[in-house]
Length: 359
Image (cartoon, rainbow, N blue to C red; front, side, top):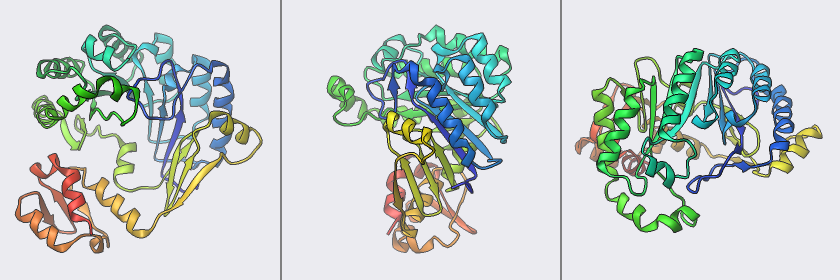
């Protein structure tokens, strides 16, 4: 598993579990933070000596106290891009300094919205002012590559709310913005609480998405991936690795690795993970052997999310030639030397277009 180009470390701890979240997270358990960092460091012994990128995600990695976070960052191998996810309420001058001194080159800040009522609906703990303060604190510490995570389709969100969020986000001049459609999983307490409003929002999602794309483009951001926008040269290199179908190694509870045709999912039990790693064993995991068709289909579905031609590189056999002709004729995609690219119109319907193309 050490041949991966990209390395992901999962830190599951959160101060609160938001109702819409389906990531592997753990609240409380502060007494386990130190053991967990030690386990991650032990797992790092099997990591690439110099990956292209490292992403420390969660959960809320910045919830770790300053000394623990510094210890984890110091144990990481050198790389070209090191991203750490942070929540605004955890950012202090000392925390920001730990990030910069630890070699972090990119911070991804979970803002989600700047509207108090939407933050309350999402059960986020940071206020709009706290988000702004966190950005200022990170900038003063020397962070020069900042991503803001935002959402549309939040229950109660109006077109005015969306416009205000876009104004406030762009006024902070982040180098990168990830703008995601809220996905509330069926059966969660969030869908039980907001089901009717989520259905109403579903009717507005297309308009919201078009507004996001048009506004951020007008403000100098490049729409380089379905949900991601950046200033020139500030693409998220780690995420590009996923979209380009590169191999990646995931460490930590619940983390996923894909190397060649093998996919490994560490099980989501924190205690089982700690017990195994501390005993010198591999974390308990489920291993899935992907078929060439499955891996190739994933490459196509992810690669076509980008704004550049997707090289087929022998994947032509996965594409239905009749549907390719039909989609091209409908103006959904263009065939270019060595690959295909979704058109502007096709990018707004990417999932539908790609699923139609595949045999």
